[in-house]
Length: 467
Image (cartoon, rainbow, N blue to C red):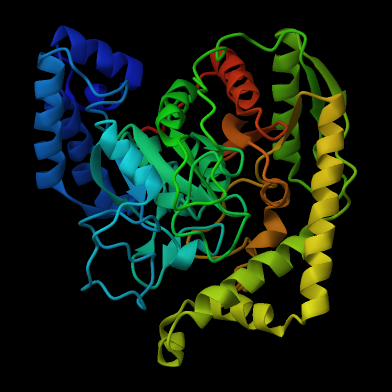
């Protein structure tokens, strides 16, 4: 039998083959994941809650099902985690905030959590998030700093930073994150894993994010195939989310290995408005050459939607104000300083400003949809630069709130609600991962997965060397 670190590194397909022939059990896989958490979480801070007892009990139940050759799904017995912004029955969901009262009834699963449990996934615990998921790095007044496994002096990215670090360090196989402006893709890029923000509504949300209809849920994994397995389970409608898409009977594994030959790809290092680190631009150029070798046509082009920064800021900051309004006035002093700053800005917008942003968002969405009449896939950097110093909101250590300034490639596709993924495409000169963003039209998540899998087949994802 493989040792614990080798076992923890196995993907869904490898584990379930072992489960089926009884050479490895779900209990052994769970123990391996818990061992990784026990070894590396004290230094990296990926998990804010770990429930050894519950995980092992659920793994034993999965082991019995596999012994009878009656698994509940393709992920039965697979170790998984939940971002601590998503309701999970029996565990507190504190959202990285000192304002959340731990001592209350935690008696409901969010739709995505319910689907994972129904499928037999073994939930290990909750992963860290900045307060209410408000920024593109991962530290909070409640849980402190989550660190990058490639260099612990650097940020993991956020807001799903804990999930990204957990995936990179094999602290479980499947990790559920959220993405309101890049919160799956930014830490996927910085921490060197695969992360997918599906088409809005594909994975139901309850309660709906206070940041509104720019917030998505999706999988974060160490390989593309595992994300497809996870999305097959998550992509089911739930009546609690009136935005959730109807049943489409999609199997996201179908066509995942079909390649990209003949696909029309656009590549843009600026999206027409952004600046980018030269090392990131070079990595994008090298990635586009891989797709040419794989038979895609690749053209330099970008959607003609101008600079969406202010439109996103208004949506995001107004969402922060909306979140803060739900708290007692006495709790404001407990909040992250940067969160208070953007909530103040959100409260300063007047009604005409907000509705102009709503109208501009609609135009951005229309122009982006028209762009994907010409192209199947768009390639961009995931983030404009590699990871920077941990514990800061931005590369400028004096900046307290403006994470949007260095994430110009992610948030436009929250405004447009399109599927977008990040996959590692190289390293900076100081050894930090660089992410490639793959975007397609709404409801064409399968194309994003197929393009990512084609790239992964030539450029496999590397994991950090841990000690």
